[in-house]
Amino acid sequence: MRSRRSGWRLTRPCRSASAAPAAAAESPRTCRPARQGCAGTGQSPGLRSHEGRAGRECAAMFRRIRWIVQIVLLLGVVAFFHYFLPQHDIVYIVGTDVIRTDPSGPDQTTRDVRYINAVRPDGRTSEYRNEDTGWGFPFYFKFDSGKLQAEAQALQSTANDPVWVVITHYGWRITYLSWYPNAVSIRRATGPDEFIVPWFNIFFLSGLALFAIWLGFRIWKFKADHIDPLIEEAVDEVDLRTGRVIDRAEGFWARLLRLIRRR
Image 1 (cartoon, rainbow, N blue to C red):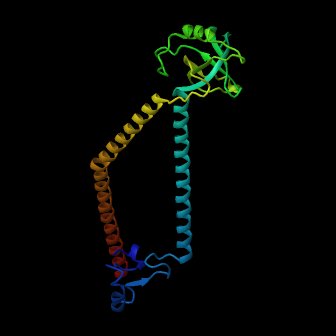
Image 2: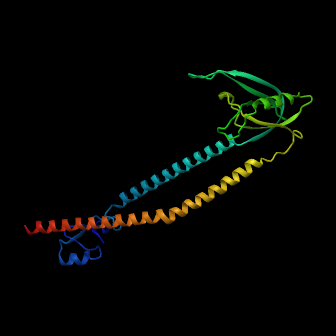
Image 3: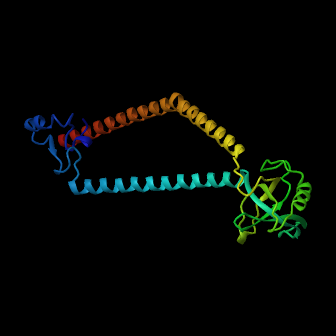
């Protein structure tokens, strides 16, 4: 065992810490123990306990940071899917509007946006925009906003004689940001208490979960078969080269000490 690990301070080369007492009996100047402290470290107990406590605190801090990052990413994924996956509202339509908007910024042309105003069974109002998604994201491939507006106008009713409909949409209504959910389709409902099963969301999220499990297994297997052996081989090579460098350094200092003593 090398002197830097055994806690013996070198004045002449020592082969191991266990051989230090015998070597000291032969020559009193061969080896001498370092300052008493934690076993085999040459450090005082106070210093070692302080370093250990600092290391544990640092590890705990990194664990908290890792958990915070993971929670933020998870919330971001949940919010992403909740925004873009279809949702269903049971309402009765009270009116439709077409509002001309003037987007800010250079080279922006005005456009007409269709809106649908509705009321929920509990009396709360809901507003929806009615815009085509085209071929882009999100991939609803909606091209019939004009037809949907006509259906909404035909299904208008009043609170005294409501015609309940199911509006399928995506997005959120955020008043302070002027965000409106985009209506995708409209159909008549059996009543205000109709139970709607989101089959598309169930199948989509189930398929996505199965794909994520399969992908995670493939990544784990690839890591275990190809990456881990390379890392272990690299670590072993570094340990071997480090050991050789330390041996050479110890040999150099031993020769230097012998040369000094001869003089």
